[in-house]
Image (cartoon, rainbow, N blue to C red; front, side, top):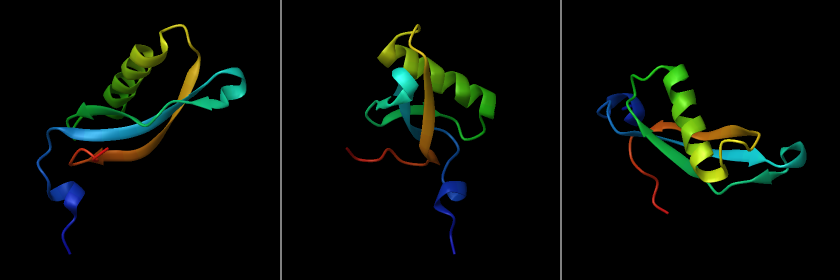
Length: 78
């Protein structure tokens, strides 16, 4: 059986996540994504996710996130 995640080229992966914010983090954003290389470290991925959240919510907004799809080889159609 072929592993579509591991067998696909390592560049241009998409990690999808939802950011939670507001009092007790009860609000959430739409599904967001970051584009990255499959070989990126978890620290690099964390920085990319934080940059994307800051872009959407602003740097001063306390937030956390939940990853929905990690390093999918193709963009998920909207």
